[in-house]
Image (cartoon, rainbow, N blue to C red):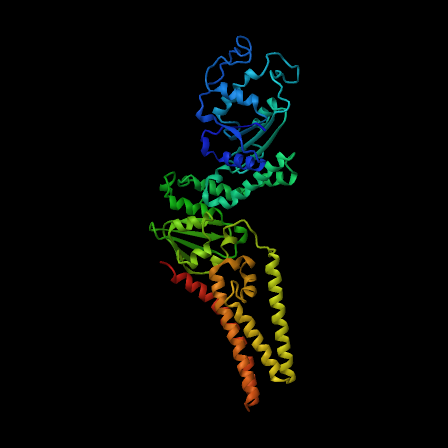
Amino acid sequence: MNAFIINGSPRGENSNTLKLTQAFLDGTGICDFNVVQVAKLDIKPCRGCFGCWKATPGVCVIKDDMQGVLEKLKDADLVVWSFPLYYFSVPGVLKNLIDRQLPFNLPFMTGEEGGGHPSRYDSSRKRHVVISTCGFYTSEGNYEAVDAMFARYCSDYEKIYCAQGELFSIPELRLRTDEYLSYVKQAGAEYAGGGILLETRQKLKELLYPKDVFERMADASWGIAPSADDSDSNADSPSEAGAKADESLTFTRQMAALYNKANYDKDRIIEMNYTDIGKRYQIHLSADGATVETENLEAASITISTPITVWQAIARGEIEGSAALAQGKYSVTGDFSVMLKWDELFGLATPTKTQEPSAFRSRAKFINGTNIAGAAAFAAFLVSGANHWFLLAVQLFFALFWGVTVFMKVPMTCYFSAAGYGGGKMLKNPLFTRTNRILTACWAIEYLLMAIVLMVLHFSDAPGWFAALTYVPAPLLGIFTGWFAKWYPAKMAMGKQR
């Protein structure tokens, strides 16, 4: 297939829309195609002289780069029009190219409703795809002029209109924009196979972010303080309205814009202490939304001390946040539970019961079942006064069962506590697994100590009350586990900053 890509963005190769176009082409499997950067070409406006109809039929009298474009257009089997929305239509440089297609038409009237001119060449098999991004929160209601224009000279065309196009240039949002690009790639594969499926079309219509979140991010992205009469309380002060904001402040405002107030549980103050540039900002979270404060800072719920480069890398998905914390690349003081809820507070997810991977579910069920069965057997035989050798075997089994997992990638207690901290995804958190490795070792030792008590009971004349010692360690260790699971991660988070 002879494909011709027309990049109508004035930004040329830096076009956000071109990222979608490349994803679409990757999906089609077309590797050999011509690309024209309209902004780099010398294409003058049409003069309206009709010389291409009268003086030199089919040939424009203007001598510029349009001659080469017309040849590629004429020969192409597939034409992909790639451009951002400018004032509800195409950019001016692209409109010049569209106007200069007049040589492709004959001067005679077709008699169709509204008027029209027949094509000079057979274009019945030529296919067109229109890919465009716009800066509004939605594409709905913003492309009427574009559709009306392309419908006039493309007998049949496919279209992908994506709102919030500027977000494709923000590295920190790459996880979400890459997800959308995967849908565009899928659309390309389906288009090459016969047509884009309805399910994929629905995915392409989904907003990257909800309206209020996008508009807050868009406002913050300009890097200037809001106007003095703006209701957005992110304004540092009326005197700074309209002034250029520090890049670190813009980054913090964009982060605050991602706050999902649907997951609000209580008021919080998150202080960002950017250690490499000496800047401190506070993000105030409430049921009404998030605001960023730069002056008159209050007592923070949590303080994150980090080089801004590290936090930006985490936001871009280049490094994993919990791994960076475990490696001492940043430190945390205060309410550590905020870190465990971070994805809920600054993401789109609502608190729902997530479906865990089958491997995690099956292992958790096996471990829970084994421990429940063992505990029941131990209690039954202890009450019945059965032979101590059986009880000893049970305790040694559990000591070994738990002890071995201390040296495995996922220690035993992870499967019990992961449910309370977001599920199986916590198994990838090194601080979480390190905490549970210590706790698993403690429980393995507890089982071993109980086995020792049983041996003493069997081989000595210890008094009957000595057997009560088998009941003491478990509840005490349970209390210790609850405390340690909160204290240790917070302690490590405070002490690992380098």
